[in-house]
Amino acid sequence: MATKHDNNTVLERQEQKLKPPPMYQVLLLNDDYTPMEFVVTIIQEYFNKDRETATQIMLKVHRDGKGMCGVYPKDIASTKVELVLTHARKAGHPLQCVMEEA
Ligand code: TYC
Image 1 (cartoon, rainbow, N blue to C red):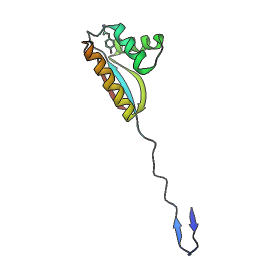
Image 2 (cartoon, rainbow, N blue to C red; image 1 turned 90 degrees about the horizontal axis):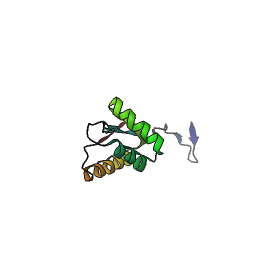
Image 3 (cartoon, helix red, strand yellow; image 1 turned 180 degrees about the vertical axis):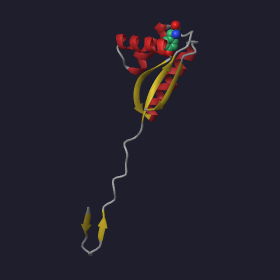
Image 4 (cartoon, rainbow, N blue to C red; image 1 turned 120 degrees about the vertical axis):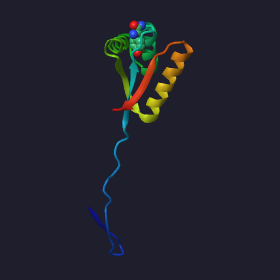
């Protein structure tokens, strides 16, 4: 669309080029050592899931090797990964948490 200005110049309106920000999935990965109960509480605490949903996600990770806990903008996803890893290491568990573009 074009807009006529007072001084007779005509400015073509800029195309809208802004895309919505990319979103990131946060995934937990399976391992043989982290206790199931610990993973369930991590999912409840950091991904705001109720106990039943957290248990389903944990079991999916246990069965399939990985599972999605949530989808967030980049900085929030990255903060969740760091918080989960810090909590797991402090507790002495090798739990792995990663993010990937959705
Ligand atoms: N496989 C683990 C066990 O049998 C449980 C587990 C589930 C570990 C999910 C990590 O992300 C994980 N104790």
